[in-house]
Length: 302
Ligand SMILES: Cc1cc2nc3c(=O)[nH]c(=O)nc-3n(C[C@H](O)[C@H](O)[C@H](O)COP(=O)(O)OP(=O)(O)OC[C@H]3O[C@@H](n4cnc5c(N)ncnc54)[C@H](O)[C@@H]3O)c2cc1C
Image (cartoon, rainbow, N blue to C red; front, side, top):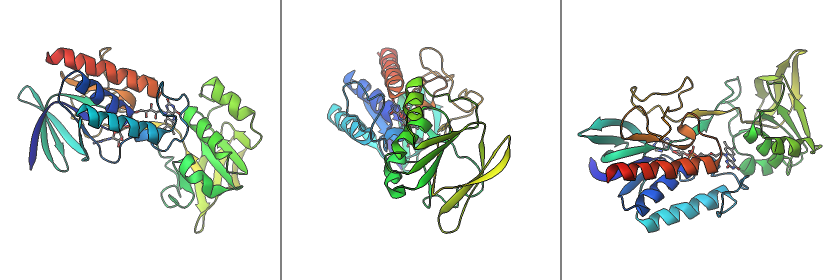
Protein backbone atom coordinates (compact mmCIF):
# COMPACT_ATOMS: atom_id res chain seq x y z
CA UNK A 1 0.00 0.00 0.00
CA UNK A 2 1.43 3.40 -1.05
CA UNK A 3 1.74 6.21 1.42
CA UNK A 4 2.75 9.65 0.21
CA UNK A 5 2.30 12.96 1.94
CA UNK A 6 1.40 16.34 0.44
CA UNK A 7 0.59 19.75 1.83
CA UNK A 8 -2.77 19.63 0.09
CA UNK A 9 -4.79 16.95 -1.67
CA UNK A 10 -7.38 18.09 -4.21
CA UNK A 11 -10.10 15.56 -5.02
CA UNK A 12 -11.19 15.79 -8.66
CA UNK A 13 -9.55 16.97 -11.87
CA UNK A 14 -12.53 18.91 -13.18
CA UNK A 15 -11.98 22.59 -13.91
CA UNK A 16 -12.33 23.49 -10.21
CA UNK A 17 -9.80 20.89 -9.03
CA UNK A 18 -7.32 21.79 -11.78
CA UNK A 19 -7.61 25.48 -10.90
CA UNK A 20 -7.23 24.93 -7.14
CA UNK A 21 -4.15 22.72 -7.50
CA UNK A 22 -2.51 25.10 -9.96
CA UNK A 23 -3.01 28.00 -7.54
CA UNK A 24 -1.60 25.93 -4.65
CA UNK A 25 1.50 24.98 -6.61
CA UNK A 26 2.10 28.60 -7.62
CA UNK A 27 1.86 29.54 -3.94
CA UNK A 28 4.68 27.11 -3.18
CA UNK A 29 2.71 24.20 -1.69
CA UNK A 30 3.01 20.54 -2.64
CA UNK A 31 -0.31 19.54 -4.17
CA UNK A 32 -1.72 16.29 -5.53
CA UNK A 33 -4.90 15.83 -7.54
CA UNK A 34 -6.89 12.58 -7.58
CA UNK A 35 -9.18 11.67 -10.48
CA UNK A 36 -11.48 8.67 -10.83
CA UNK A 37 -12.08 8.93 -14.60
CA UNK A 38 -10.29 11.44 -16.81
CA UNK A 39 -9.40 15.13 -16.38
CA UNK A 40 -12.01 17.69 -17.41
CA UNK A 41 -15.18 16.59 -15.60
CA UNK A 42 -18.56 17.82 -16.84
CA UNK A 43 -17.22 19.99 -19.67
CA UNK A 44 -14.98 17.36 -21.20
CA UNK A 45 -17.47 16.68 -24.00
CA UNK A 46 -18.72 20.23 -24.53
CA UNK A 47 -17.33 21.40 -27.89
CA UNK A 48 -18.25 25.05 -27.50
CA UNK A 49 -18.31 26.45 -23.98
CA UNK A 50 -20.79 29.27 -23.50
CA UNK A 51 -19.64 31.39 -21.84
CA UNK A 52 -16.13 30.45 -22.92
CA UNK A 53 -13.57 30.60 -20.12
CA UNK A 54 -11.76 33.95 -20.05
CA UNK A 55 -8.47 33.65 -21.94
CA UNK A 56 -8.85 29.89 -22.44
CA UNK A 57 -9.80 27.45 -25.17
CA UNK A 58 -13.48 27.45 -26.18
CA UNK A 59 -13.72 23.64 -26.31
CA UNK A 60 -14.07 21.80 -22.97
CA UNK A 61 -11.53 19.05 -23.74
CA UNK A 62 -8.93 21.51 -25.09
CA UNK A 63 -9.41 23.82 -22.12
CA UNK A 64 -8.99 20.98 -19.62
CA UNK A 65 -5.95 19.64 -21.49
CA UNK A 66 -4.38 23.12 -21.42
CA UNK A 67 -4.92 23.30 -17.64
CA UNK A 68 -3.60 19.77 -17.08
CA UNK A 69 -0.43 20.67 -18.99
CA UNK A 70 -0.04 23.85 -16.92
CA UNK A 71 -0.41 21.77 -13.73
CA UNK A 72 2.30 19.33 -14.81
CA UNK A 73 4.61 22.28 -15.49
CA UNK A 74 3.77 23.82 -12.10
CA UNK A 75 4.72 20.55 -10.33
CA UNK A 76 1.27 19.25 -9.32
CA UNK A 77 1.21 15.47 -8.79
CA UNK A 78 -1.67 13.88 -10.72
CA UNK A 79 -2.88 10.50 -9.43
CA UNK A 80 -5.47 8.55 -11.43
CA UNK A 81 -7.23 6.78 -8.57
CA UNK A 82 -10.75 7.25 -7.16
CA UNK A 83 -10.94 8.52 -3.60
CA UNK A 84 -13.07 6.09 -1.62
CA UNK A 85 -12.77 7.58 1.88
CA UNK A 86 -11.17 10.31 3.89
CA UNK A 87 -10.70 10.82 7.60
CA UNK A 88 -9.14 13.37 9.92
CA UNK A 89 -5.85 11.97 11.26
CA UNK A 90 -2.94 13.42 13.28
CA UNK A 91 -3.94 17.04 12.73
CA UNK A 92 -4.35 16.47 8.98
CA UNK A 93 -6.17 14.00 6.75
CA UNK A 94 -5.80 10.46 5.57
CA UNK A 95 -7.16 9.96 2.04
CA UNK A 96 -7.91 6.42 0.90
CA UNK A 97 -8.09 5.47 -2.78
CA UNK A 98 -8.35 2.24 -4.75
CA UNK A 99 -4.54 2.27 -4.89
CA UNK A 100 -3.44 3.18 -1.39
CA UNK A 101 -3.50 5.68 1.41
CA UNK A 102 -2.19 9.25 1.25
CA UNK A 103 -1.72 12.00 3.78
CA UNK A 104 -2.34 15.73 3.51
CA UNK A 105 -2.36 18.69 5.87
CA UNK A 106 -5.51 20.08 4.21
CA UNK A 107 -7.94 18.75 1.58
CA UNK A 108 -9.96 20.55 -1.09
CA UNK A 109 -12.99 18.61 -2.30
CA UNK A 110 -13.61 19.41 -6.00
CA UNK A 111 -15.38 16.18 -6.91
CA UNK A 112 -18.15 17.92 -8.83
CA UNK A 113 -21.45 16.42 -9.79
CA UNK A 114 -23.05 13.97 -12.20
CA UNK A 115 -26.08 14.33 -14.45
CA UNK A 116 -29.23 13.05 -12.73
CA UNK A 117 -31.08 10.13 -14.24
CA UNK A 118 -34.76 10.32 -15.19
CA UNK A 119 -35.39 7.06 -13.35
CA UNK A 120 -37.93 5.78 -15.89
CA UNK A 121 -38.23 2.34 -17.54
CA UNK A 122 -35.99 2.00 -20.59
CA UNK A 123 -33.38 4.57 -19.51
CA UNK A 124 -30.70 2.10 -18.42
CA UNK A 125 -31.73 -0.55 -20.94
CA UNK A 126 -31.26 1.83 -23.90
CA UNK A 127 -28.08 3.55 -22.68
CA UNK A 128 -25.78 3.75 -25.71
CA UNK A 129 -28.68 2.64 -27.93
CA UNK A 130 -30.40 6.01 -28.17
CA UNK A 131 -30.12 7.22 -24.58
CA UNK A 132 -27.14 9.58 -24.30
CA UNK A 133 -25.64 12.21 -22.02
CA UNK A 134 -23.53 13.89 -24.68
CA UNK A 135 -25.03 15.99 -27.47
CA UNK A 136 -21.67 16.85 -29.03
CA UNK A 137 -20.41 13.24 -29.12
CA UNK A 138 -23.60 11.42 -30.08
CA UNK A 139 -25.50 14.15 -31.99
CA UNK A 140 -23.88 13.19 -35.35
CA UNK A 141 -25.44 9.71 -35.03
CA UNK A 142 -28.92 11.26 -35.28
CA UNK A 143 -28.62 12.96 -38.70
CA UNK A 144 -32.08 14.25 -39.73
CA UNK A 145 -33.76 12.16 -37.00
CA UNK A 146 -36.05 13.25 -34.17
CA UNK A 147 -34.66 13.37 -30.63
CA UNK A 148 -35.97 14.50 -27.24
CA UNK A 149 -34.13 16.64 -24.71
CA UNK A 150 -35.52 16.52 -21.20
CA UNK A 151 -35.10 19.56 -18.91
CA UNK A 152 -35.53 23.32 -18.91
CA UNK A 153 -32.29 24.78 -17.55
CA UNK A 154 -29.11 26.12 -19.21
CA UNK A 155 -27.66 22.69 -20.04
CA UNK A 156 -30.89 21.38 -21.59
CA UNK A 157 -31.30 24.42 -23.83
CA UNK A 158 -27.61 24.58 -24.78
CA UNK A 159 -27.55 20.91 -25.69
CA UNK A 160 -30.87 21.11 -27.58
CA UNK A 161 -29.38 23.89 -29.69
CA UNK A 162 -26.30 21.71 -30.40
CA UNK A 163 -28.54 18.81 -31.48
CA UNK A 164 -30.33 20.97 -34.07
CA UNK A 165 -27.04 21.04 -36.01
CA UNK A 166 -27.60 17.34 -36.76
CA UNK A 167 -31.21 16.38 -36.12
CA UNK A 168 -34.35 17.04 -38.13
CA UNK A 169 -36.41 17.83 -35.04
CA UNK A 170 -35.69 18.31 -31.33
CA UNK A 171 -38.41 18.13 -28.71
CA UNK A 172 -37.74 19.82 -25.39
CA UNK A 173 -39.79 18.11 -22.70
CA UNK A 174 -39.99 20.17 -19.52
CA UNK A 175 -42.08 19.44 -16.45
CA UNK A 176 -42.27 23.12 -15.46
CA UNK A 177 -44.42 25.78 -17.07
CA UNK A 178 -41.45 28.04 -17.93
CA UNK A 179 -37.73 27.56 -18.57
CA UNK A 180 -35.28 28.17 -15.73
CA UNK A 181 -32.42 28.85 -18.19
CA UNK A 182 -30.77 32.22 -18.78
CA UNK A 183 -32.71 34.45 -21.19
CA UNK A 184 -30.04 34.31 -23.92
CA UNK A 185 -30.40 30.52 -24.15
CA UNK A 186 -34.19 30.87 -24.25
CA UNK A 187 -33.88 33.44 -27.06
CA UNK A 188 -31.64 31.07 -29.04
CA UNK A 189 -34.02 28.11 -28.95
CA UNK A 190 -37.12 30.24 -29.53
CA UNK A 191 -35.66 31.37 -32.83
CA UNK A 192 -35.01 27.78 -33.92
CA UNK A 193 -37.81 26.20 -35.93
CA UNK A 194 -36.41 22.68 -35.48
CA UNK A 195 -37.31 22.86 -31.76
CA UNK A 196 -40.76 22.07 -30.34
CA UNK A 197 -41.27 22.55 -26.61
CA UNK A 198 -43.74 20.68 -24.42
CA UNK A 199 -44.17 22.39 -21.05
CA UNK A 200 -45.90 20.78 -18.05
CA UNK A 201 -44.87 17.38 -19.39
CA UNK A 202 -42.93 14.45 -17.93
CA UNK A 203 -41.43 11.33 -19.50
CA UNK A 204 -43.00 8.08 -18.31
CA UNK A 205 -40.99 5.55 -20.32
CA UNK A 206 -38.43 5.13 -23.09
CA UNK A 207 -39.56 2.45 -25.54
CA UNK A 208 -38.10 0.56 -28.49
CA UNK A 209 -36.69 -2.72 -29.80
CA UNK A 210 -32.96 -2.84 -30.52
CA UNK A 211 -32.78 0.97 -30.35
CA UNK A 212 -34.95 3.75 -28.90
CA UNK A 213 -38.05 4.22 -31.04
CA UNK A 214 -40.31 6.46 -28.93
CA UNK A 215 -41.01 7.94 -25.51
CA UNK A 216 -44.23 7.97 -23.58
CA UNK A 217 -44.95 11.40 -22.12
CA UNK A 218 -47.64 12.61 -19.76
CA UNK A 219 -49.24 16.02 -19.24
CA UNK A 220 -52.59 17.50 -18.22
CA UNK A 221 -54.18 16.09 -21.36
CA UNK A 222 -53.06 12.49 -20.57
CA UNK A 223 -50.39 10.20 -21.99
CA UNK A 224 -49.01 10.28 -25.52
CA UNK A 225 -46.25 8.48 -27.43
CA UNK A 226 -43.76 10.54 -29.46
CA UNK A 227 -41.57 8.74 -32.01
CA UNK A 228 -37.88 9.63 -31.49
CA UNK A 229 -34.50 7.97 -31.94
CA UNK A 230 -32.58 9.71 -29.17
CA UNK A 231 -33.18 10.82 -25.58
CA UNK A 232 -30.91 13.32 -23.79
CA UNK A 233 -31.76 14.13 -20.14
CA UNK A 234 -30.39 17.30 -18.54
CA UNK A 235 -32.61 17.52 -15.48
CA UNK A 236 -30.03 18.67 -12.97
CA UNK A 237 -27.02 17.40 -11.11
CA UNK A 238 -26.37 15.17 -8.13
CA UNK A 239 -23.22 15.79 -6.09
CA UNK A 240 -20.29 13.34 -6.04
CA UNK A 241 -20.04 13.46 -2.26
CA UNK A 242 -20.75 9.88 -1.11
CA UNK A 243 -17.11 9.20 -0.17
CA UNK A 244 -17.09 11.99 2.44
CA UNK A 245 -17.60 11.15 6.11
CA UNK A 246 -21.00 11.71 7.69
CA UNK A 247 -19.80 14.65 9.83
CA UNK A 248 -19.24 16.79 6.70
CA UNK A 249 -22.44 18.85 6.51
CA UNK A 250 -24.48 18.68 3.28
CA UNK A 251 -27.65 20.40 2.15
CA UNK A 252 -30.90 18.45 1.62
CA UNK A 253 -29.71 17.35 -1.85
CA UNK A 254 -26.30 16.14 -0.71
CA UNK A 255 -24.26 19.15 -1.91
CA UNK A 256 -21.46 20.01 0.54
CA UNK A 257 -22.20 22.97 2.80
CA UNK A 258 -19.49 25.57 3.43
CA UNK A 259 -19.19 28.95 5.07
CA UNK A 260 -18.38 32.07 3.03
CA UNK A 261 -14.68 31.17 3.20
CA UNK A 262 -15.44 27.81 1.46
CA UNK A 263 -14.38 25.68 4.45
CA UNK A 264 -16.71 22.79 5.29
CA UNK A 265 -18.01 21.87 8.74
CA UNK A 266 -14.70 20.00 9.24
CA UNK A 267 -11.73 22.29 9.87
CA UNK A 268 -9.10 22.03 7.12
CA UNK A 269 -11.52 20.44 4.64
CA UNK A 270 -12.68 22.80 1.88
CA UNK A 271 -15.20 22.42 -0.95
CA UNK A 272 -15.36 24.22 -4.31
CA UNK A 273 -17.22 24.01 -7.61
CA UNK A 274 -20.19 21.88 -8.58
CA UNK A 275 -20.03 19.68 -5.44
CA UNK A 276 -20.57 22.72 -3.21
CA UNK A 277 -24.01 23.87 -2.10
CA UNK A 278 -24.58 27.33 -3.58
CA UNK A 279 -21.95 27.23 -6.33
CA UNK A 280 -23.10 29.53 -9.15
CA UNK A 281 -23.03 26.83 -11.83
CA UNK A 282 -20.70 28.27 -14.48
CA UNK A 283 -17.05 27.47 -15.05
CA UNK A 284 -16.14 30.98 -14.07
CA UNK A 285 -17.89 30.52 -10.69
CA UNK A 286 -16.15 27.19 -10.10
CA UNK A 287 -12.74 28.61 -11.01
CA UNK A 288 -13.17 31.70 -8.83
CA UNK A 289 -14.09 29.53 -5.82
CA UNK A 290 -11.16 27.21 -6.47
CA UNK A 291 -8.68 30.09 -6.49
CA UNK A 292 -10.20 31.60 -3.38
CA UNK A 293 -10.09 28.33 -1.41
CA UNK A 294 -6.50 27.62 -2.51
CA UNK A 295 -5.42 31.07 -1.31
CA UNK A 296 -7.20 30.53 2.02
CA UNK A 297 -5.53 27.13 2.45
CA UNK A 298 -2.11 28.64 1.69
CA UNK A 299 -2.71 31.39 4.24
CA UNK A 300 -3.75 28.77 6.83
CA UNK A 301 -0.63 26.66 6.25
CA UNK A 302 1.84 29.55 6.50
C1 LIG B 1 -23.99 19.57 -20.17
C2 LIG B 1 -23.30 20.70 -19.48
C3 LIG B 1 -22.78 21.76 -20.22
C4 LIG B 1 -22.15 22.84 -19.58
N1 LIG B 1 -21.67 23.88 -20.33
C5 LIG B 1 -21.08 24.93 -19.73
C6 LIG B 1 -20.58 26.05 -20.50
O1 LIG B 1 -20.69 26.04 -21.72
N2 LIG B 1 -20.00 27.10 -19.84
C7 LIG B 1 -19.89 27.12 -18.47
O2 LIG B 1 -19.38 28.09 -17.93
N3 LIG B 1 -20.34 26.07 -17.71
C8 LIG B 1 -20.93 24.99 -18.30
N4 LIG B 1 -21.38 23.95 -17.55
C9 LIG B 1 -21.15 23.99 -16.09
C10 LIG B 1 -19.76 23.42 -15.78
O3 LIG B 1 -19.71 22.14 -16.30
C11 LIG B 1 -19.46 23.37 -14.28
O4 LIG B 1 -19.54 24.64 -13.72
C12 LIG B 1 -18.03 22.85 -14.02
O5 LIG B 1 -17.72 21.79 -14.88
C13 LIG B 1 -17.86 22.42 -12.60
O6 LIG B 1 -16.54 21.93 -12.48
P1 LIG B 1 -16.10 21.07 -11.23
O7 LIG B 1 -14.64 20.86 -11.39
O8 LIG B 1 -16.61 21.69 -10.00
O9 LIG B 1 -16.88 19.66 -11.34
P2 LIG B 1 -16.82 18.49 -12.43
O10 LIG B 1 -16.71 19.03 -13.78
O11 LIG B 1 -18.00 17.61 -12.10
O12 LIG B 1 -15.47 17.70 -12.09
C14 LIG B 1 -15.35 16.89 -10.96
C15 LIG B 1 -14.28 15.83 -11.21
O13 LIG B 1 -14.09 15.07 -10.02
C16 LIG B 1 -13.99 13.70 -10.33
N5 LIG B 1 -14.38 12.91 -9.15
C17 LIG B 1 -15.63 12.77 -8.62
N6 LIG B 1 -15.60 11.96 -7.55
C18 LIG B 1 -14.32 11.57 -7.39
C19 LIG B 1 -13.65 10.71 -6.46
N7 LIG B 1 -14.32 10.10 -5.48
N8 LIG B 1 -12.31 10.50 -6.62
C20 LIG B 1 -11.63 11.14 -7.62
N9 LIG B 1 -12.22 11.94 -8.54
C21 LIG B 1 -13.53 12.17 -8.42
C22 LIG B 1 -14.93 13.53 -11.52
O14 LIG B 1 -14.63 12.35 -12.26
C23 LIG B 1 -14.68 14.83 -12.29
O15 LIG B 1 -13.61 14.67 -13.21
C24 LIG B 1 -22.02 22.86 -18.16
C25 LIG B 1 -22.54 21.79 -17.42
C26 LIG B 1 -23.17 20.72 -18.05
C27 LIG B 1 -23.72 19.59 -17.22
